Length: 119
Image (cartoon, rainbow, N blue to C red; front, side):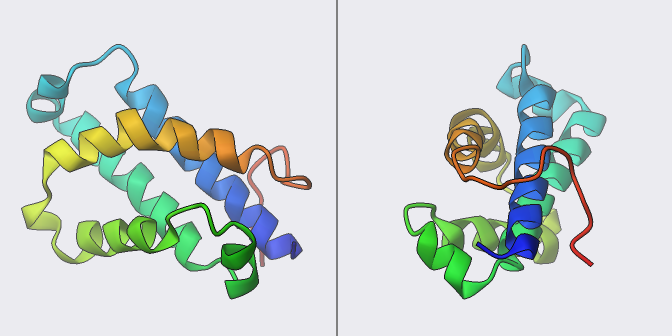
């Protein structure tokens, strides 16, 4: 896999892990009550989608079991329809889907240990 794809996968892992930390020990109701949590979670999920959108077609095909269109589609929804975010979906994404994504992406050989800039 190309080096820039591996770096972007690291970015996805970092942002997904951050989102998971943000919701750890919290309840769905906290998302409604805590503006900082809501903004942090939105940003983390947007980063996941933005990094995913920059992956090469080859990387996406190599990782065909990952739902890339859903990930990038969610990013687009959060960015362009930011006033109409379904917070139940945002919460479910962070609690139910991102941990599995991290587990899958951690299996990829060559992913850098820490976040790097692909430029």
